[in-house]
Every structure is written in structure tokens, then in C-alpha cells.
Length: 432
Image (cartoon, rainbow, N blue to C red; front, side):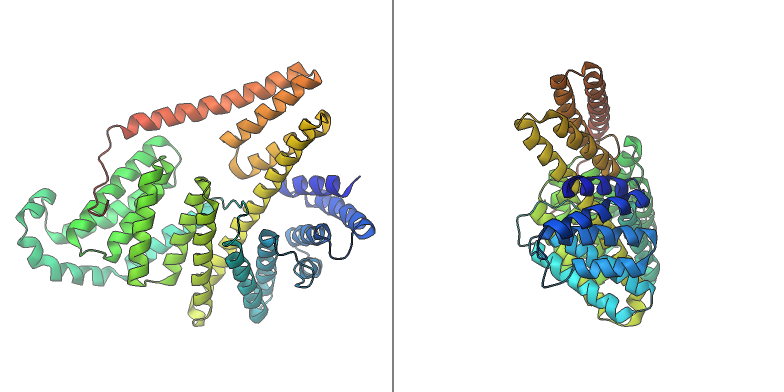
């Protein structure tokens, strides 16, 4: 078995959480790499990395650290393999943190940040995919902010009360006194963010309506560029992105970012916001903007790490989120590499080998995106074409039918969402 075949076998096993098979495959790849490649060959470093990640998953931290330290060796590491280096440094940071070696953990975390900052100046195609963990962190931060600033919220309203009473049109529009308006704003924000976690169209539409109303309340009740306007903008941006309102989401994210930067608010909160921006721009295939946002988040986390120990749990949480994000990005990159290899083989009429790569890339993509994703259906179409050339009409028909099923379901959801969106109120914000 060649080095490449062993690596592909191990990568698929990792995606399936079959760590015993992954260990055997990567050991075989290491034996081949040590026999055939030079000590500075990038493929040897990749093999060290895969073995280290496998032992990390198996809980054997001693072996994991040995291999990951080899993979991150500054004298051997390739400058263009920044994604792998970031993942490995974050893995080492996680293990050091778990073992109470805080100094080493910070060192590896800072190295990962440095790698990300290098990556933002490149043209490499990285994918930073969304994770439930990031959404939960964002929502937790929002709730924590509401709880901590409840008193200042009330104080602000008391100061604004005279202005509010002098604006009868505003009071008539809302039909209530300021105290109730703040309660309404908080309830709309919390319910909107909770509903946004659901995937069904009706929940997302209701989330949009609630968060849009919250933004209108915030702009009416608070001064320009107040932090609660930024909170409303950033929350509404998340839902607008889910609804396919890309231009509106981009405007909302950028305006919220401007206010966040102007107000110099809690770095933790801004870091979470920047990670959501990174996810949005990745979905739009704007990888440079995604890398820029993620790098800015990393810089903010580094600031937190330099502060007092009271922030340590927040930093650990963000470090863990970076780790999950980068691991998923690494799987996506492996899938893309398999697709490229499959295309090359198909062009050279090596159809059986091409089918092998297409089939395995589909499995990796499903691991990241689930079954219902257009990238999955696209590669199913590629595979169906190969199978037809190979004369396997039955399997080709199955692949085509599955691709059509995915495309029909996604199209149906999009149509339902468009119908629901037709009656939505416009986003009202003076800067747009």
C-alpha cells in the first residue's frame, strides 16, 4: 500500500472515529514515509501529525505529544502547511492545559495564533465551518452580558426618560413606557437567539422577526453606536445569514464590527463575534475575509490570556472552540484534496481509482455537513458519471437519485423560506 493510500485509509477511519484502524493505517504510512522520503519532506510531517491526532483521540497523551512535537518542529515544518500546524499546536495546548502545564499551554496557543496570523496573508483555501459549540458560546456570552449589565441598563433608561417623553411619535409607536421597552428588548433578543438554533424555516423566520424588532427598539431608545445596538445588529446578522440574505448579513456584520471596535468592549465577546463573522464569510467562499476575522479573534483571545486568571475559563473555552473549528477545516481540506485527485485520475482515464477518491470524499463531506448539502450532491454526480463509464449502471442510478433527492430537498426548503420571507418587514437601520 502506498503512503497516499495509507493516509486516505487513516483519514477516513478518523472521520468515523475508528481510531484503532486509523492507528494501523498511519503507522503503515509512517513506515513508508521513513523509508522513502527525506527527513524534511512535508509528507513525513503530515504523518507525524496524523499519528499524534490519533493518539490524542485515543487518550494516549504521551504518544500524542511525542508525535505532535515532531510535526510542529520549527526546523522541519513547511510554511505553507499552516492549517495542520495550527491544529497540532492547539492539540498540544489542550493536553498541557489538562495536565496543569499552563505555561506550555499558553506557549502552544500563542504559536497557533501566530500561525493563523500568517495564514491571513496567504491565498490558501481554508474552510472554517460552523459548530454548535460556537453558537452556544455566543448565546452564553449574550445571556451573561444581560445579567451583568441589568442595572446599568435601567440607569441608562432613567437618563433617557425625559428625552423619550419629549418624543411623542416614538412613544406612540411603541405604546409603552421605557421600562417595558427594555424588558421587551431583552425578551426579543433571548427568544430570537434561542429560535435561531433551530433549523426549521418557521423558527428561523420568527427569530428574524424578533431580532429585527429588537434592533428597531434599540435604535429608537439608545444613542447612536450604543453597544446594545451592536448586540442587536450582530444577532440579526446571524439569522439573516441562515435565511440566505447574504448582502444584508454582510452589512449587519460590518456595522456591528465597527461599533464593537469603536466601543472597545469585552474582548471575549468581540472574539466570539469575529468567529461568527469567519463562519459567515466561509459560507460565502470569501476565505480571505474568513481568515482575517478568525485571526482578529485569535488576537483578542491572546489579550485575554495575558490578563488575570479570572479569564482562564473563558480562554480555555475559546481555545477549545478554535480547536474544533480547525479540526473540521482540516477534514474539509482533506476532502477537497481527494476531489482534486479524483478529477486528475478521471482525466487520465484511471476510472476505478477516481471512483475510490470520489466515494471517500463524499464520506468526509457528510461527516462535516451531513447528508443534505450541495457539495455532497455535486460529488455524487461526479461519481455517477464515473460509474456510468465503468458500466455499473445500477450504482450510477443510485448515486444520481441520491444527488437529485438532496437537490430537491434543498430547493424545497429554499422555496419555503422565500415564501415566508416575502411578508417580512424590511431591516430598518439608518446606516443602510
